[in-house]
Structure formats: C-alpha cells, structure tokens
Amino acid sequence: DIVIPDITYLVENADKVKGMLLTHGHEDHIGAIPYVLPRLNVPIWGSGLTLGLLQAKLEEHSLLDTTELHQVEPGDRFKIGNFDVETIRVSHSIPDGFAIALRFPFGIIVHTGDFKFDQTPIDGKVVDFGKFTQLGLEGVSVLLSDSTNVEKPGYVPSERVVGNKFEEIFSRSFGKIIIATFASNIHRMQQVYNTADLYDRKVAVVGRSMAQNTEIAERLGYLTIPEGVKIELKEISDYPPDKVVVMTTGSQGEPMSALTRIATNDHKLVKVQPGDTVIISATSIPGNESLVMRMINQLFKRGADVIYDAIDFVHVSGHANREELKLMLNLTKPRYTVPVHGEYRHVVKYSELAHETGMPKENIFRMEAGDVLEVGADGASMLPRVTAGYVLVDGIGIGDVGDIVLRDRRHLADDGIFVVIISIDRVTGDIVAGPDVISRGFI
Image 1 (cartoon, rainbow, N blue to C red):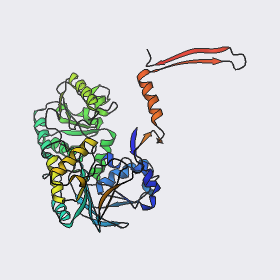
Image 2 (image 1 turned 90 degrees about the vertical axis):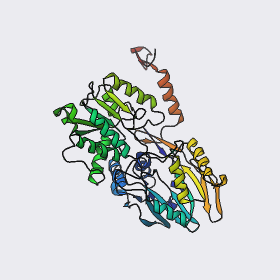
Image 3 (image 1 turned 180 degrees about the vertical axis):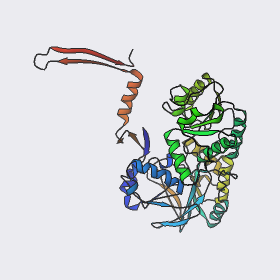
Image 4 (image 1 turned 120 degrees about the vertical axis):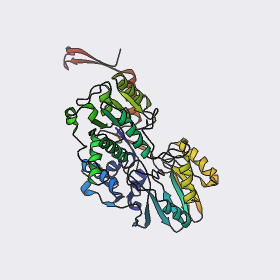
C-alpha cells in the first residue's frame, strides 16, 4: 500500500535522536510518521499547517495524545537538545514551508527543504532572501539542496500564472468545470475558489484527502473561501452546469481515484457531459504517464474539453529550476554541498551545476540512502554506510512484504492461478465432493 523508510539505524541509536523537524506538510514528508512513531517516539517541530495536517494522521492512528508537537514559525530560532535551529521561509506548492539552518562551531548546515523562488506568491509571503544572504555571510559549511528540477532551465513561473489561466478558461466555459489537482496544493485550491467566485460558480469537493485538507486549511486560516461559494457534493444537481465547479483528487490517474471513476462514468454524483471542461492542474509523476493518458482519453470520449499541462499553462512546479538552484548556491556560499530530494540523475546534474558555479568537485558529495557524511572544522569525509532503505506496508503489516512475496504476486498477476478443490474421506480415501475448479486470469 505504501513505502516508508527503514529507520533501523535511528532506532539502534535512539538515545541520540532528540526530535523530528518537518519542512512542510506534503505526504512524502509526513506520511510515514504514524508508522515511525511507535518505534521512535520523539518530539516533532513544524509549522502550523504542517502540524495541522499531521495531527489528522496521528488521530487516525490513535497517536495524537502520545505525541509531543511544537509549532514554530518561519524565522524562529530555538534549541532541540544541543542543536541550535533556525527556520527560514521558502515558497513551495503548499503554504508554511521552510528551510532549516543548524549552527555548529565549525559553521552552519542548511537544508533547503522543497523550495522555489516565487516572488509573487499567492499568500504574499516571499522567500526570506535576506536570511539566506545573512547565513552565507556567517559561513555555511554544508548546503543540502532540493535537486528535483535541476534538468529544467530558467526559473519556475509564479503560481499566479495558473490563476490567470483559470480565469481565461472559466470565461470561455459554458458547462460544468472539473478541476483535478493534488490534495495538498492549498494555493491552487485558493485560486479555484477565487476564480469560481469571480464567475459566480459554486465549488464542491470530491475526494476524502482533499475534503480533509480543505477543512484543516480553512480552519487554520491558510485557505479563505468566499462566502456562499462552497457547497456539498450532493448539492451540485441543484445548480445548472454553468454554475458548478467540481474540485477533485485523481490527477495521477489512480485506478480507484475520484477522477478516474468520473472518467469511466462510475461516480454516483459527478457525471461528465458533452460541453463540460476538465482541467488537470498537475503534472504526471514519473511512472504514472500511461494511467493519466488513459484517463484523459476516456474524458475526451465522454465529450469533455480536457486541458492539461502538455497543452496549456494549468500547472507550475513547486521545485526550483536551474537558475534558482544556482541562486541558492550563490546566496548561501557553502563550502560543501549535497544534492537531495531527487533521483540519482538529478543528483548527478546538480553536482555538475554546483561545479559550474565554482565549487570544487571534491566538495560536492553524491549521497544515497545509508551514506554517512562527517563534517567538522577540518573538512568533510564519507564514513561507512549504515542500514537504510525501504520498508513496505501492506494493510496493517509493516515490513511483512519481502522480495519473495512480491515475486509471487508478480507471477500471479502475469500468469493467473488455477485451483482444483477436492474433498477426500480421510479414512477411505474416496472423493466425497468435487472436483471444483476455480480459474482466475488463466486461459
């Protein structure tokens, strides 16, 4: 069902682990915490929205009452054990994200978190360029930098570009509008509500995670919904199609997602009619392309006008492009750098980019899960690897699914199964029932 990190090394050294710092509230950064806490219950620090999203997960796993949470704001400086910690505001595709600076006698270690330099953000909270510059003047020893978009030139466009495109699409749409985006993209949701209000449309939300995140973000003040715009999904039939917007999950074409069920006409309340507009306001995660294209084809077959990032500007990334990554390097002026949050090809391309900015190759470390880097006044060097990797969660079982089980499941998926059931008398050996033959996926 999900994949979480192997924390064996941390558990074995639990006396040294003083806390957990969260840079932002995306699923790939907080989703594993309910599975980690039973083995490593340490205090957690994060921003208001990040902790709000985490609390919902902890409550589902009956862990909220036993978890120590500390809310901090971008720009705060505080202690965790002997660690001197400072948070720095950054832009991302979710509000309240920050980078982290750790001060040591030999210098500062900066972790960028997931970031981009959006100078016209939806919430008006611009990246703290001054703080990054100040850290560079103080002396940054190591920069651990987001490398996800290192292959993309230039700068990431502002989130406001998407809002402008929404207005253009709304102005020419005369049927129902269905918008699919990531459930955690609060800024994108804000623009949907604002544009719907501008064009006198009502907004209904589909998908458990999106409904939950909308409620949390609105309650905490990170999402402002104009009065009278939000309606319940069951109410959409009370309005003409040109007065309705449906905001849904499923932008990755997941087989059981809301948008896929809408595309296959399996959703009870949302039906696509000729003349409707579907906006897929997300990019395909690598590996999901075929699922997304299949879903788009199904929507076209139902008569919808489908708009997606390959044909129009309905999505921008939350990760810095090449010029922004260079700017972060030049602001912080680190002695060493470690590219993180990317596949190995991103690590390699970031290493080349860092070298282009003047950093010696020997000061750039390409690390994988389990690698250890020791940094001090005398320099930096790699140490022996520690236990790391991935743990598979299947239902309520954590780590129960190994290579053999995965191999058997692949065989069943590829070859099918053929079962013959016969009941035999234990004493006489005679057949008393059957044979019953069950065939699944076997021709």
